[in-house]
Image (cartoon, rainbow, N blue to C red; front, side):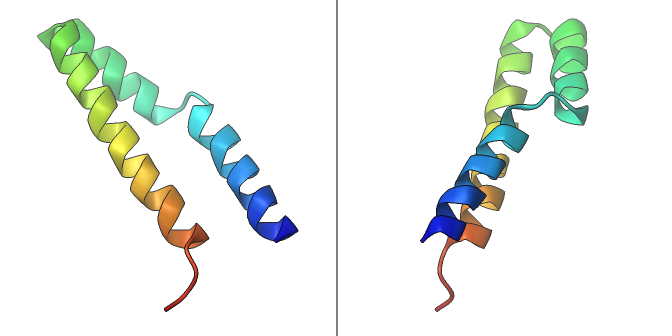
Length: 60
């Protein structure tokens, strides 16, 4: 159980760190407006959620 808690903590920190995703959101917001930047941020967040939950889920 400790390993799962540790994995969740590490994934939470890695998800919050700025990286290439921040550059994509900034570019989209600068070129297409803040609404498109917000939509892009939401799509990236949804993808990160999926990629974070899959490894943490128990095998079936």
